[in-house]
Amino acid sequence: MIQAGDLRRGMKIEFKGEPYEVIEAQHVKMQQRAPIMRVKIKSLKTGRVIDETFSAGDKIELPQLEEKEMQYLYSQGNEYVFMDMETYEQVSINEEALGEAKKFIKENMNVHVLYYKGQPITVEPPMFVELRVVETEPPFKGDTASGGTKPAILETGATIKVPFHIVEGDIIKVDTRTGEYVERIK
Image (cartoon, rainbow, N blue to C red; front, side, top):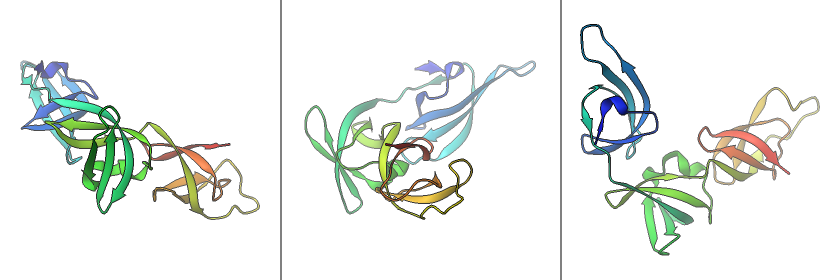
């Protein structure tokens, strides 16, 4: 257990029996009252974000989380199959638990799977991934490398904005936290 006054961005807590991640934490001192913590927390199960207020002295539970490195093998319907890198055990994870991560994972990619009370709840891909552009508009004469962007569909089905000079077949680096183009891989 920790005190609410010790909450920081990125910490994982248990609130009303569910695991949450602290997105924002603000310590507020009020005149002639006890200080409070205003926090914005995101559910690790549903992705829903809520605002909460705690007294600075409130005790907050820490969730029983376990992170495992796993390899993405294949998808079957709306289930994604991962293999534990230590035990070689295969686990199916529902498409909902993947959330935005499904846009950036491809077969044989290593990811981190977060378990809560023995159940997989979220999948975290690497911070940067290299993916092939499978569909985008061709470049036109006069397009410059600096300036605008155009939509591109990647091999995983994700659509992101890329600079005009990117063509089909290029391999690009994508930031999985923001879903933004980083650079073209030579």
